[in-house]
Length: 499
Image 1 (cartoon, rainbow, N blue to C red):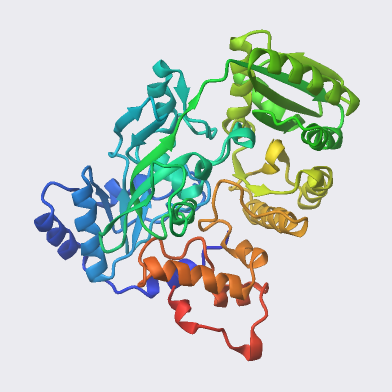
Image 2 (tube, rainbow, N blue to C red; image 1 turned 30 degrees about the horizontal axis):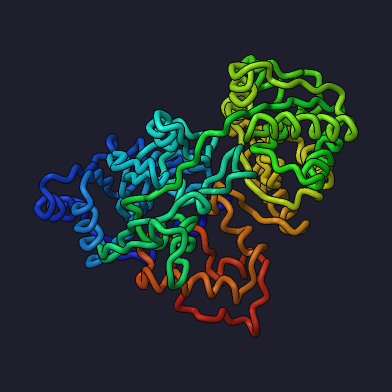
């Protein structure tokens, strides 16, 4: 998580007189709220990765698309970088601003424009909260499936930027699987429509390219999402295990038996105790691990799947299995899992939330390795997993005021991400790369792949003004990181080294 490269980013950008820029912008857009005093921009210094901060030069708070278009044209003409921000709940530093840049806050675009019940779609602005979509669709017996743990606060524009997931994405997919159309603005203010309200459209799949692009290709101004009919029935089984590796093996056995749960989540003892103390979800605090397995669908199918999963869990070594007796208990079981992050924050001065994805079969091996790394670095790790799709969230507990602990937290986090790559996985499953994982991108991809990524960005943002220094490392950075071989001491395509 080193941020030495921030100097490279800012140093490559022309210095502008802030007072003059504010005056120009206010003359151009008199109805646009612009914050520039240090006390006004300080709340925007970071996203959910709060360990690292930078004060933006300006914060713009538009509420009309025309304002955003004019602002982007203004920034492009003056070569000022722009970082987009939604609700600020991201966990990879993707919305961390630049000291010589404009922070474009899209939170005021918070209207649900239309719900088409017959087509089962909703057209929404990017600042609409994830949960608000399901709440608006509920009277029609519909809902929006991706449900990040931060869904009460996170915005759909940020979900698109990070390709957000959630506890029910094993069966229903990530953000990219649940959107049909995006309206986006380029750095020059041009409005593009990607995708369509049909299930498929001709041409390259630019909708998928933009989903997860972390604000580096364009600014989302409207999203059309798919809505699903609420399942007739949903049951949650809570299985206790006396060994973490047994719980890990049980995940693969459930999927291998052909059961695709609505959600399949895992927590270890440290996470169980923290969540139970915080939420009173009814978790067994003496268990070394628990699995939460939800099956949903028609009533008869749910009963049959519950019986199959129960048998599979017992065969895998579960010491106790409980089925939520009613909807209230089901919600409590999920509330404990969805509040695991803040719960852990109550037992440690600081924690570093990791995000990586591994093949399910590698769960036992990776859990054993994380335990070994925890002992090696002398830091506790609470493990929370979207176990069904292999997306893990180790929470590294540390005290930033204790000398050396923050450095150790960064080091163990890097080792965990590199372990994910080693076993055939990825350095992120849903939180994105941002600034947090940029070094580990060098371990995930080779120079040809990174060059292609830079070329794709240049096709939409030739000057590299949208969210520079995030997501895609330069080849020079990877050479410094020691994860890339540079032929004859020369970095290919040196023009990519601007940032």
